[in-house]
Image (cartoon, rainbow over all chains, first blue to last red; front, side, top):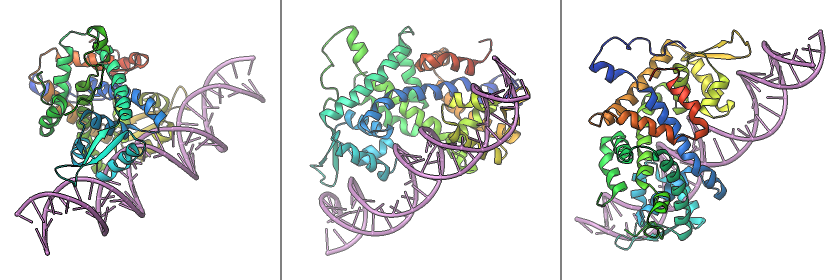
Length: 172
Length: 172
DNA sequence: ATGATATGTCAGCCTTGTTGACATATCTCA
DNA sequence: TGAGATATGTCAACAAGGCTGACATATCAT
């Protein structure tokens, strides 16, 4: 197998090598791991006529009851037209409920229905099973370290927002 | 904020809780991290009129010169029609070259051109920069641990194949 | 009352995945 | 040598889920 990296390999020892030698292992493992990670839900979503886009919406609404459209758009980073397409279906099939805002009646507050929470939980458990299988037989500090790594992988501009969304106002 | 997990929370102490309590933090962090991770290449690919599908093909061909169509299909897990659409463009724009197999002349052996290797390397470096930023100031064993975690996240059926593809026949 | 804001909707386009059907070249094996 | 398996290419149609642009409506804020 010829070398895919022409020069750059053994040229500078020290700092440059660390900065410039591609981390092919982590790049490729991240790709394969993410693909398998989302494949579990995919199978089940198909039974309901839903796709990944529905999953994301259902997940974040279920996790954050009373979420507004604007907040959801901010989380998903898609256009309102894209969101509306899947959200409409989730509402029609009674997995999500949209109530008018009380303080600001222009807003729509989104809530997962009992059926919606049930599906969201089912999918989250599936993914949790995979995560726990990976963590089992690893060092006890692995989970915390992986969590820290993933957070630092996120754009610094978003990381505070994500941190708040994921960890909320918890004690940990 | 109401509780998104109806029952199941404080019911059983012990093993069940570990198995059944969703790991929302890792699930969500994985989603946000992956999204930002692929966004770096996206910007550059746009300048060339390429998308993510082109990136994946170019990456694996560049990393594995002489790859056949069948092997590439096996890695990407898409249909040959999907692959052919993007592969044709990469060949037309001279980022990938297709040579007839020598042992088996039915096969096409794929090679990245100089231009193709250059782009692949540029994108890999971008992603590496993000990875290194995340790893900097983390424990030295972090990289190895994250790598092990990602590998274990992969379907057990694929993991041997992925391990071979990623780590090849190296010493580490 | 007016302009800004939150949301909804129509129409059309792109990328990237899918299936099914069929063509061609080449290899393998009886 | 001839038949069937294999590797690849290609056409056509479709679906999911992104996008843009334009415009409508209701409500809020000043």
